[in-house]
Image (cartoon, rainbow, N blue to C red):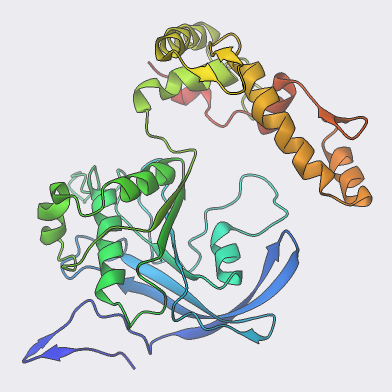
Length: 344
């Protein structure tokens, strides 16, 4: 059954179908063990009245009803707005699993599943992206299409206040890379009139698009300097195939980053002094990376710590203290951007 609201002869085309769901279960791996989650799954719901592409301008909603056999009331729960965008590409909401595949084996589940296990309502919106193209070659997902679609999805949630489970005043967006940039933009541009004409064109709800909080992981925002910073960090780190990128070009970009870093005149914390391209690696290592490793390793049980260190021999553990070099860390993380992407 699908619910609708009629006003005279008009029917609300973007009313949340609260009775049209399936009940699903999944096992979620948390840092404290596994949790069994039962939830209502609402799939592929249109969030605008005049979509450009119905495969992309839709969203999925997951509402927890039990966690480890304990009932959950998500009526007033925070809403986790999970942005699946990568590389400013489109997100096709027709798929049932919106989680991006993990690049590395993880001990815990995705942020979406962790939020669900914590009792949050999880919203996974699709959106247009720079790869969307019509049969005649016209690109219809270029900027600002992605942020317009995500704003429309936020407006949809607010439009359905009291119908859709969750507190629409507690919407928290989250994304990584280009998704992180879009999450930042969502947080910074709430109710901006710059987008009104685009939102009207696609039949977005007449509602606010502000959000409560924005989580921005590795946001690709400063595109002008991104290649420079990447080559400063990963210039002589091989690709997954074991090859180096064009080293002459990489060094050109590193030199440009050195100039850029100097122009910022940034000071490190705890009286570290001026940050430069020559000392930034040591600053990151001793101010953030090693302290983070120490905090994590000290919190583990002895057998867990021993297993973790055996799996990561690049970390030395001595007298309850971790040590490693910045080069060790880079080799562990690895280079994701290959030589075919390295262009000026």
